[in-house]
Length: 271
Image (cartoon, rainbow, N blue to C red):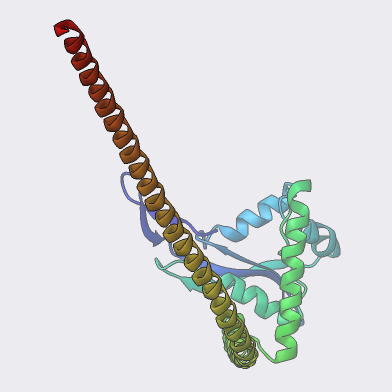
């Protein structure tokens, strides 16, 4: 695996130890047959590390089981070939590029990762996806994984543009339909609203006529009440005047009678 370069304080410098992309394989009649693609920064020691792990029955990688059971058991000499080297910029995607190229060429690689029960299914899916992609690359005529991904990205953009255009046209059609429906609705509503307005005017006219009639009646009633009040006040004034006149007449009569009585008494006294 690649190794990042740390500074004296253990901080990431953004650079990598130089390393290699390599293959494990064997020669068959001078034809190189790879069965594993790897990447590591220990160029000189990597082959020895693999051979030591195989010898010590390490099972961390599928390729070790394959070497023991299918390669060494058949007395096939296997070795390592360097495919590419990288500097401080790091390995980028060169390992994946080489894996996919070999799969497209039809080589059966043993790069599938091992794992416990929790990871086995995930690793299986990842490897099956690589195999599916390799088959698609083969059918499309690609040997470069990078160019294949660029083509997929291009196709994805084209699909998105086509979908966006289709959606835009659909939106325009829907908007046109909406406007046409709205215009038809307005036309229908205009006729209905005209009738409703005419009916409203009729009802308002009748309502106003009722109000006017009620106001007239109220005014006539008020005038009648005021007239009756005036008549009643006049009657009361007349009654009061008559009562006052009657009282004045009684007073005068009593005074006259009193005067007569005094005269009679005086006459009798002088007689």
